[in-house]
Image (cartoon, rainbow, N blue to C red; front, side, top):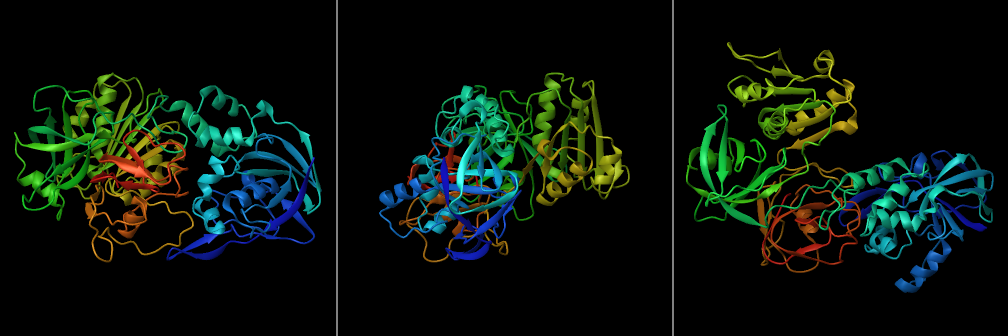
Length: 580
């Protein structure tokens, strides 16, 4: 039997951190008297980021006095107060190595069930004034855990904690936390965890992704981020241009092959290539990424490039690149790939966004797939619409294929099915299969509109996958929104270290010696980034390392996939090219 030593609550507030404003509820203070425990919260409590904290499955966060004593010794600190780790219940007993997921406890007038370990988050590092804390909680196997409220009631300091039921499978909080965050990921243990009904849906989804992901060294952690096979070769290698073909008035395809005639490694349908070219011989090379549009496994690659008005590389490709030239190419990459299965497939594109979904259509046509396939293509008019004949030829032999072409401003003589945009009303009228897997590619606004339209038409949001050209949307939990700026060199004098290239952003800058990570540099350049823990645990920041080598400080809790990098704790060991 344990004892509830303190009940701690706090409403979210804005906190200044590294020149930014963070909205967080991690500051908790002890409450005198009794407090009502309700389905989603304690009275008087709140969370700033409901995507990662709070809600019915994470209503109450628990941390132990024994862990307090451990951290006081390890960190050489004596300034802790109740709620120091952002917890709602500070308890005697209930160690993470004893409590199991699914255990039920009676505390005061309420009944609780253990649902998951604490989620790693940089904000506990802010509260502790120590950015290492998110990683240390995992490494030292003292994460704490969440409770959901099965029966509402009041609780107060001094209440006895009585276990009333054991969770099935008897997997402790430490076991489950390590299964997601630490190396190993034994499938038998993951399957056990998935047999625990009380385990929160988010952790169940992560474990299902781990079972479906690669089970090989260097394969990465599919429970934390999307994974793909390791790149076929490191860095860049020369490939020869064997043909340049016009697809529309604005798009041309470039065919690339091995200079010695050997077949190139097969790409997955939907992946992209990163190329490095030097339009100006006197200037530094430029790096860009383009989706593959040809049939996977053809022995050569095909990229399709839209000429942009101010695009240095696209202009070079359209006006000066010639057959026989050699360009440097990194191996195919990307996780926006066609998944095997029997469900219907929706291939949805806007403009040049047709390139990766055309590669998927090639793959389906090659295997004469019996799956229902929908080709939904949007363009301005027939002159700029790419792959019209090619897509029709690929769809023709498929036994269950349908096509719908939507032109926003058609010209006389254009062939199309509707005018305007791929709206919710239009998609509902097509009677799309709601159990379909949808693959959507195009400009950012197109993705937003079409994703919402597909969901309104009945397609499950979990089945809609998107790919955006250019920089990806940032993920900066809790950070107050600021006006977006295009990527730029950092302020102040330039660094003297190795060159760091952000391929998607079209930016290359020298590294500055001193403290800081690749994530810090990206933020200083306003390169859109994704992160959560900032200490090598959560893998939200995992990005493609297209070339070069890095070192880590601190070392990641679980290494990234081969060919990737955790930018939150990485520093370059020489020139690097990042898929950012």
